[in-house]
Image (cartoon, rainbow, N blue to C red; front, side, top):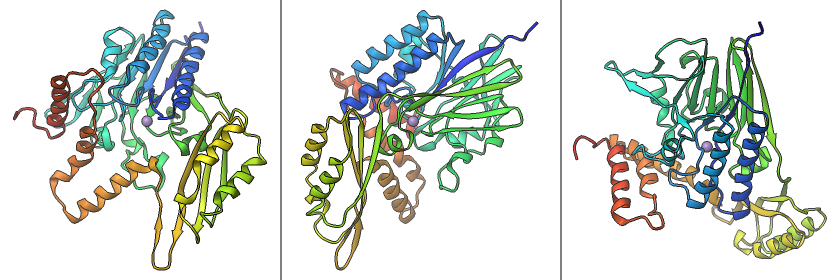
Length: 402
Ligand SMILES: [Mn+2]
């Protein structure tokens, strides 16, 4: 008798509700929809989502409505979904819309852990027939890395999947970010990873470590690097694992890099460059670089450029001026683009912590992100207050005190 084969999908970093630009938020969602369609058409056995399904713990109602419709399709096709929270849809209070999705019967959050007396963290499995699925969620500011050095799996199984939303050292190379050594993780057959927004796959002995890439790129740089979203389809007979990265091309992306030196004449220079190109129905990424010896970035008339690109029937247009340097006689400053806010914040916090070293500093990134939570439309002030307080108490580890 042939061994039974199992075929499943592995998605991560869908960031539903992400993107400020309406067209891109829609495209982001359509890409997720397309992935679901492929999964149903191929009648896969189950779906894994390794964190950051939503772009925030409290996504807008419109996004929730559409997302629930997609999960219902999978539910009707009898394809179970197993997931973990990521750094974006994680909340310190433990309350997120993933719970609502789970209560509705549309998914199973496989996070199931128990802290032991010796400080180790025991993970318990969710079973899909004979396959054991374990998971540990991502947290804000890579706070999960410390925990991951303490996890172990409750029991052995013929085939084990470990879902994690974190960074393994292999994908970051020499960049100094918090990461885990993959060899230090408990043994599994398939490591269903999320968090790093690129496609990455490696194998050690019989274990595969896979980042499927986001189901749609999430910012300027990712659009430029990845062009479109992707996910993974995995087939296994229990011993061999075959993986396939499924690309979801929806709209063509074109990155245009132009070097400028004069802010005053840049607008005309850019427009005549663009004039030679076919931009029809494309996502146009305009990247400016160079050192300005005259004028400043504020002199570039982006509304005029945008108007011109619209006339050329582009699908949408994004610009990035973060590589432009401004030269003056006595100092040089680098301008920064708005999608680098997180980087700037962590840089400032890093410098501050160095000058003012206290134990409290470790709370700062989480506090900042929690205090930026806004009151939802129609949310009662008391509910909002309670939500905020619970999060803060959790972060400051004050649960038992207050
Ligand atoms: Mn993500």
